Image (tube, rainbow, N blue to C red; front, side):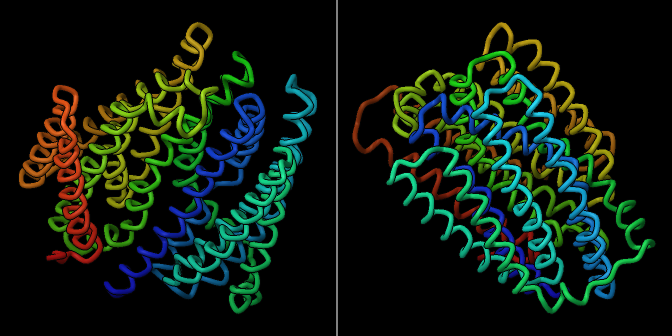
Amino acid sequence: MNQRSITSNAFFLAFVQFASKGISALISIVLARHFGAEAFGQYAIALTITTVAVIFTDLGFEQELVRRVSRNNEVLYSSFGAIIAILFPLITIVLISTILLTAISDYSIDVFHLVVILSLWWFFTRFQVSFQALMQAILRADRAAVVQAISLGLLVATLMILMAADHSVKEIATAQAAVAAITVGIWIFVTRNILFKTSVDKSTVKSLLKGASQFALQNAAWTLYFHVDTLILSYFVSEAEVGIYTAIFRLIFVLYIVPNEFVRSASPALYQKFSESRHIFFDLSSTLTTLMCLMAFPAVTIILLYADTIVPFIFGQDFVAGVDVAKILAVAVLCRFMTFGMLETLTTSDNQWKRVFLQQVTLFINIGLNFWLIPTMGILGAAYATSASEAILLLLSIAFFAGLKFPIIRWGDLKVILYFFILAIAAPGSLLVLDHPMLPLPVLFVYASAALYFLYCRRFILTGKSAF
């Protein structure tokens, strides 16, 4: 695995994941503004129900495929064949069960109809994840980028036409399912030379399940963590309030996409350096954590200073109640950015189970806080629960690093963080005291400087070479 292939594959992989999750989040934002809080709340509840159900199919197969193939290309056909053989009946059973359970619950008929439609969408979308992992494993993420671009183009064009014609949210969801089905057809064509050569045997299935188990709990914790608040809210507040909270959370989630996908794209290089040189590995780990901290500064600053303007501008006046939610969640953004690099360091240093433990503990704390705060505080309680949980995860991660004697941030990188932190505080802070049209320039300088350091960090993490 040469450095150029790693870098190129990481770039295209980051594009694929960013485009997929970014467009998905943006679609939710557009739907929220177009349909209003109540209708979007119904869509959000149905999407949350089906997403939580799909946790039972996200058992770490894709991560295990990438890990196996990166070490031995000969297991490609048998491993991918085992994934398809397991996934098809599993996703079918899970989604049918979800539909039946929703039918006997207290949810409205509109929510039930959306659950049926979005279950069909998830059926096809779940297979897309496996195809993308296949391209990542064989270092052909460029093909995944092309397929993803076609799929997103079809989806955006279809949704724009339907919303312009004032179609219902159910028809929008149906269009999503149709585009997902077309995308799977494209994937079958693109991967036909591999797909039709796959084989399945019991030993491979067993070993795949065993190897993937270390990722299964992590995936479940990640997915449930970001949806449990909406699920609990649906039992205690109105559909409109669920819509307000989910719309704001989706907006905040957009900020998570870039650091999360960058960290994931850097994983192959971190795995490689850990086996070759621990000293270089910890240098890369420190740089990665530094980068995450730098990315947090503009995100948090924008939320705190401009949430009063951004929320009603994007969603409309029906969502003004979400301004305070956004400001509370700014704490979650800061803490989550800082833990992204630390958690990936645990994974790539053969400490995956420690990462799983941290996320499981944080998940249970988050669930407990949501049940405690939501009945009395509503959507603000959900926001406080999320921010408190992120702060606890950060503190626990620091404690684990100290116990493993892992350096969190090297002194040289820490000085860079302090430099940008001072600038990030001073520049926006001056805007609150003085009133001058040129004062936004210091803010732009801070963000431009952070962007330059971002380019340096990115190349250093993926190749070990400076960008300058």
